[in-house]
Every structure is written in C-alpha cells, then in structure tokens.
Amino acid sequence: MRPSSPPSPMPRDRVLKLIDRMAGSRIVVIGDLILDRYLLGDTERLSPEAPVPVVSVREHRSALGGAANVAANVAAMGATCRLVGVVGDDPTGRALRAEMATLRLTDEFVETTAGRPTTSKTRVLARGQQVVRIDEEVDRLLDDAELDRVRAKAEEALADADALLLEDYNKGLLAPALIRSAMEIAKARGIPVVVDPKFRQFFDYAGATVFKPNRREMEAALGAAVDLEHQDALSEALVRLKVDNLLLTLGADGMVLVTKDGKTTHLPSLAREVYDVSGAGDTVTAWVGTCLAAGATVREAAQLANIAAGIEVGKSGVATVSPQELLAMHDERFDQIGRLRRGGLI
Image (cartoon, rainbow, N blue to C red):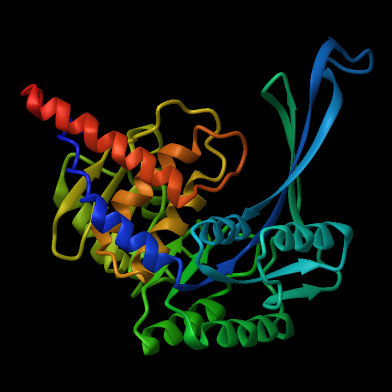
C-alpha cells in the first residue's frame, strides 16, 4: 500500500463526549463463545518419549474468547452488554459463565446445549513462547430446536439495544436463519450492525453497517487477491458484499476503511510493540460497535478502534482496552502529530 499521512486525531473533547455516551449504551453481541485457557511454565529439556519439549506448568489462567471477548471489551468501556451464545453442559461451560460473572457480564442470554462441548482453546506457553494450542470444539451448525431457543434469546436481548455486533468464529452458532432474524430486528429498530465474519457465512450479512474481515478472509471469500492500490477494487468488493461500509484489517499494516460515499481511508497501525495479536480483531469489533452506538461516525469509530487495537496487541493473550488507556494514547498521538507538523515533516 502506498504510504499516506496519518489521519488527524479527533479533538479531545469529542473523544471524551463519545466515551461518556458509550457508558450509557446497550450493546448486543451474538456469536461463538470460547474459553481461552493458558498454561504457562518453563522448559529445560526434550521428552524421552518424543522430540517435543517438556513444559513444567507453573501458572493456569483463563479468559473469555471469541464473542465473549468482544463482550468483555464492551463491558470494559462501561457499556451494558448482552451476550447471546451457547455453551455445553460441562465444566468448561461453567468456567466460562464464572469468567463472565467476574466481569459483571450477565449470562441470562447464554443457552446451554446438552451433548455439545463448550468451545475452548488451550495454549501452552514456555518462556513467553507458545509451544502448542489445543482446540476442543464441535463446529456443526445448531439444530433447529437449539437455534429456535437462541433466536428467542436474541430477540429479547435486542428489544431496546443501541447496536448489534455479530462475531462469527465458524463454531456453529451464526446460522443463516439467526443472522437474518437478528439483522431484521436491528434494521427495524434503526440501530447499527457490525459484523466480524469468517468463511462459512461470509456473504450472508447484506445490509451490515460495518463489515470487518481481515485480508486473508476477504481474499479467500472473493477467490482473488485484494488490490489495495486501486480504490475501484475495494469499492467493487463493497458492492459485491452488499454492505454499507467495509473495514479491512491488515495486521501490522493497520486497517483500510471503505465507506459508502466512495472514500477510502488507510489507518496505519499505532502499535508501539506487538506482543500478542490474539483478540485484536475482537477489540476492533467492540470499539467500532460501541462507538457507533454512542453516535460516532463510521470514520470516528474506525479511528478509535485502531487506537484500541494498537494498545491490545501490546498485551499478553486476549485482553480488553479501557477508555482511560485509549484516551492516554490518543493524547500521545495528538502531541506527536503536532510536533511532526510543526517540524514540517508531514
């Protein structure tokens, strides 16, 4: 992508106004719930049984992942979050509900399904490096009876919501019928819809306010490389997806926002250092949706979400970003750009 001047930071009083409004917003998150587990330890030798390291575990840690991590980020902004999803009737499901309780997230819209394990990802880390990840899941779509119960929960949660966030990890929750039902309610209520898609239902989100794939997902779905040098190619993708705005995340290269007015904006990454990219996309989804609920424009929401992502990747594991952290980085960035402009460097 061609280099571009960084967008001007938003006025501080505007950021403060949005943060204040976020705290009073009601956000519904629907998606695949995941429990992230971490086993941390040291390794000094290889196993005599196989050429693999032996990790002596000294710490166990759990965190909310997937759509639950989006909800945790929403809650960290002070907003009210209603999380809609499913867990199994198993210890992992109970552990996920317990993690929600510690963050004061209600689990009244979380459905328990018998015979289906709660999705979990267990990461083994030694000396700060991931050795292996173990996934436990069933990714088939919910059956009709299960889906009907989740749709009822979603309808109840959306009754007075200010925004809908759909977080798809292809673990079986977001079936086309549930997507249609939730988006129809959101459209009838006139609230924004933010979608973080995966491969399976990629083209089922027509009408979304903001559609937020990463580059790899976008290229896999379209069957071709995404040409970031030509605005027409991005605008054509927007039309093909039938969404209002496209927010394409590019990892270390930041994000590209393509809006329905035909404009393209590159938001360079603001990360000081990248410690762990786990959960960065969840953070972006949460901040974009909650900002829109607070009355932000799509460009404002993307700009603040980009700051939040830059903070999140500097933390270990999936993590949340508080308004105070965001405001501090915003102020630092504002001062930095001011110095560069005064020096004639931009």
